[in-house]
Image (cartoon, rainbow, N blue to C red):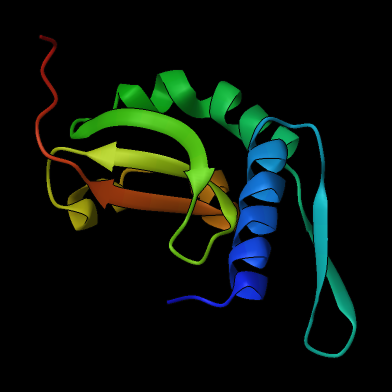
Length: 111
């Protein structure tokens, strides 16, 4: 059983993450030797808007969204229907400098 303090911390983190994803709060934290890193949903959203049409036009790309990567950082998520290695080489070079995550999701079909 989890201790009450850990449960309270988990609820607080969930609330902060939700507010962050809704764009109601920016989160910054310290990494390493005092370097501040800010991840702003607005900048990732701007990248998504700028490149979404081009990305969807790439063979094998089935979705483009903003979300959290496996480390919990905001990123541009690109869903693929083919192995990600085959899509990665087709991405615009400018995106290599951005926080992106490719994920194989398979074929997507409307129901």
